Length: 273
Image (cartoon, rainbow, N blue to C red; front, side):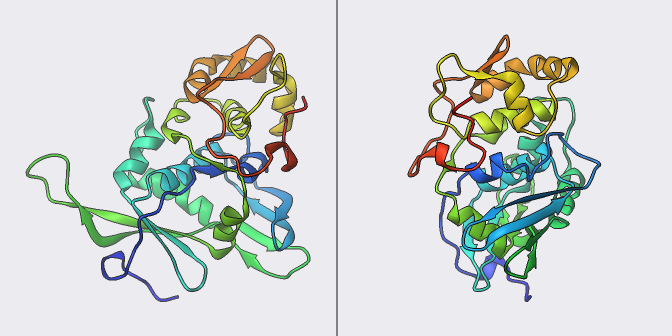
């Protein structure tokens, strides 16, 4: 495919949803921050049917995806269906770093992007193979440096595959939250539980049962797993989810921001727990 430079094509201002309900519930991103085990899951891609998603991506990779969407400066849909997003690498690095001690440089961001590029999405009924992220590359477009006297820094272009762009378009539940609030969550299980809860507008009386949420994101609720989640309770609360004892609650400032369809009708809903 020919390279297209953002400096010479027409872009449009467009806000992207930070995430969507199917992605947050589908276990595409494993319950660890950076997994070292290859995983395959089957899920539904609207308009295509059952698909198999294979890769080695976790909650930190999902945070990068959210950061690209959240910090999108401009977007453009290419003729082949690929979604191109113009973004400032500094925003991605800052979001991934959060308030933690670990600092993300460009190399760290690109390492996560490489894992996203290696994910494969293959059809069961319709034969096709695609991925999630085509590339993340610098462009000739620039943005002024916030420090006076420094040269402008280049903007970067992220390209989501046609398959992934269609996936995003088809999901009726778009989530508009600040991913920087999730960066401080240390445990991958706690991050996965938080994202799962943020796909809901309402909650059952008395909240959700913590052990059931942990099982929903794909892990057995051992004593150590529960302890890891509770250690992250303050960071989870900052993102809109509170853990109290063996129950989990959605805070008023959490949950979905736009709801054109019933959340509970989508796969992975936990509103009945």
